[in-house]
Image (cartoon, rainbow, N blue to C red; front, side, top):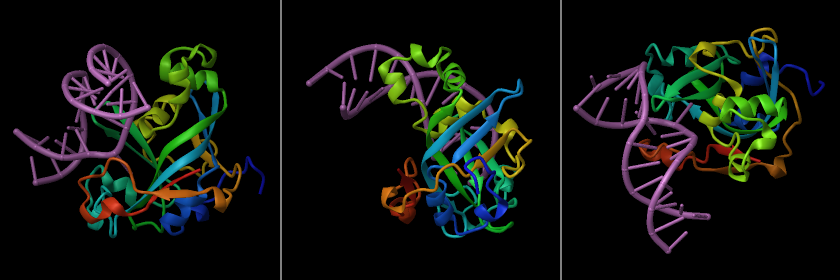
Amino acid sequence: MGAMTVLPRDFYNRDTLTVARDLLGREIVRVLPDGTRLRCRITETEAYIGRLDKACHAYGYKRTPRTETLFAPPGTAYIYLIYGMYHCLNFVTEPEGEPAAVLIRGAVPVENGDRIARNRFGRSQAELSPYQRKNFLNGPGKLCRGLDLTRAQNGLDLTDPHCGLCVCAGQSPDPAAVHAGKRIGIDYAQEAVDFPWRFYL
DNA sequence: TTCAGGATGTACT
DNA sequence: GTACATCCTGAAC
């Protein structure tokens, strides 16, 4: 399987913690409406498992218009609006009907970083301040802004190379390089706040 | 480098 | 009406 091979549905049709770890080092490929191809390597993920996780929007299999995408087949993009102004990108995991997903929390640019920089800051990569360079795609809202992802892309099939958003094999993560810790921004989730379901390189 | 505060709109109670 | 899987700015240190 080459680095540019699109990850198949079976990749996502596994235990969510396994997928969250295995996504590190993989490449998100985003094709804009004008044909520009953006590429970035995943460096940080978080797992959300509705069956048992109070931090998941679909905790206890709760179905609402928003959470409907979490019940879709594995390999579907779940994108929602947060805090009124930002978006979060997730990949649906586990068999269809099991509401679970991996949140993409961070990445580094691989192709067309200038365009990503324009989406984020309105200027080219070379014009970025050190602060902007350091905080380029290290957050879910920043990543979606850089890749021009909104709810318009919610529900896209990540295994379809022609839909404008997919994930390629990139580089398999070295298990020794994968770190785990508590998830960010879920202080409301009671016992789930301590689950070590955040993974990063 | 850390910290407090505000932006902003949708989902759900 | 309240909470929210966030980010930016500006002030203080």
